[in-house]
Length: 174
Image (tube, rainbow, N blue to C red; front, side, top):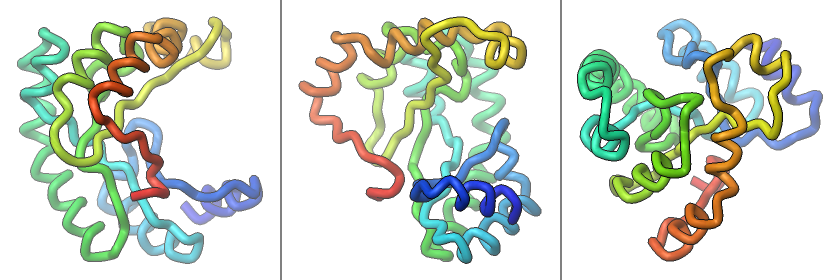
């Protein structure tokens, strides 16, 4: 964990938030280490992948049982982690969308998410790319990176954000 923070510090970029591939930062040992070591590196925010069950299902229109199962398993744990973060003075998002549909966020699905946003800070996360390349596609062969890029740059999605009163923020602005 320390090596990751040190490697990031060498980039010269400002630390916006912390998360981990496959959400490994939710593991109790890793989470505790991130909190401990992160303070030395000005850690201010951590992503908690808590996808709201009903809004996610309504937006996608499919996959209720897998969404329900993950929600039942993760909701108590993510609630505890959010409490620990509040007590530590570390900011976090309230919700995420894309957990169940990772790699397959089409314009239609993103529009559905935007129409189902609960109150609070919600992150919709993507894995966009403008072209297929082995560095990305070999590790995520079923992901539709180009379609996710198209959803992110879709003029109708941009218009929906603009007219719905959604405020776009970075973790550093929480």
